[in-house]
Length: 303
View 1 (cartoon, rainbow, N blue to C red):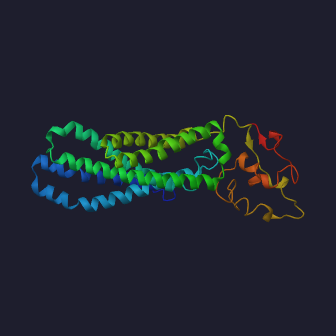
View 2 (cartoon, rainbow, N blue to C red; view 1 turned 120 degrees about the vertical axis):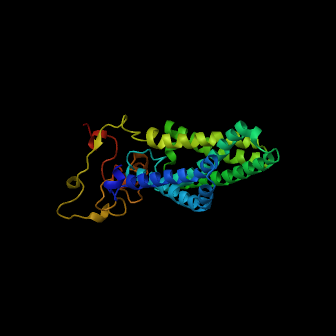
């Protein structure tokens, strides 16, 4: 495996690869107690059971690292991801949504296991199982509600409200309201009514929502404007700076970061919706101080 001999210490994926590799080992070790019990290796099982807490803590740390790092991977493509899905908070989104996925997947998977092996479970344990399910549902409701407001914070920070009234915006609203806010209320309602069936159905719907979110960021929202783009924007300092009286402070750093082409001051993508509000390029290209956006070929060049 390349991770053993090719150390890409500056690569996000290198860290992700190591986390996933170590996490897989931890999962395998956590699965050893029932294997040793089946083999009747009592001493080995006792040894494996003693390691359970340590392995659990280690597994939580590793999953935290690789989930947030996967989110950080998308920070390198601000111009490629649709502004409604792109945010400087993506690593936090990935981590919190992974917590949600963990809670709901446990509910969903345990429901399937309980149905298959119910005949082998002591009848007295069924009530305990339902109580645990309701507890997980309550936790999922709280985390989903917090996640919804984190998404609102990201939307407000990006200032892309106008994009909500577009086809991409409708799909974003469906994802946010249908897979985050709605399950939060459904979990709370189900726990209040002590309905384990409703908790399990909502858990399955939420797991689907996490999958949809990952597909949206990596496929649907990626390169979203390539087909509609009139061409690549070619920027030249020569046409933007008076060579006899150069003044970098007109654009840097209040609008764009220094020495980082295409990087805005707030870290959000460069989009027309913000320019038309006087931000980014629109601070000068407003039709008064400099030309506006009437002619696409002024800035865009066909390949």
